[in-house]
Image (cartoon, rainbow, N blue to C red; front, side, top):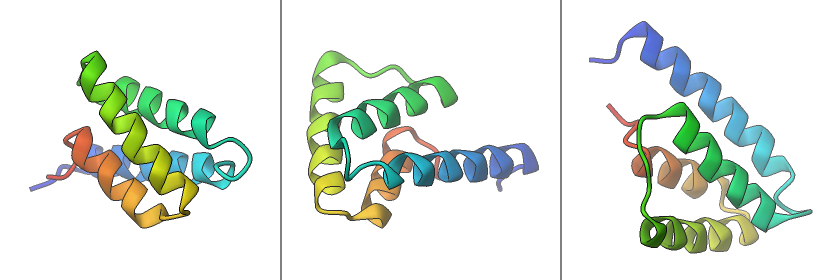
Length: 83
């Protein structure tokens, strides 16, 4: 069961992701970097260099192909935000 605090945090994070993705056409690499930083700062998880590299590759391909829903799903799955 999700608490109100968690629901609010997830909603705010989803809004921030949407804002970041609007600029993905201009600079997909910057968008990916910002998404990873957002996840690491908003949720208590630290990625290893290998995990970060793998995530960066996946997010970059999704951003370039404009698959917004998949980017959001991967973000929340990676940072264990789906309760």
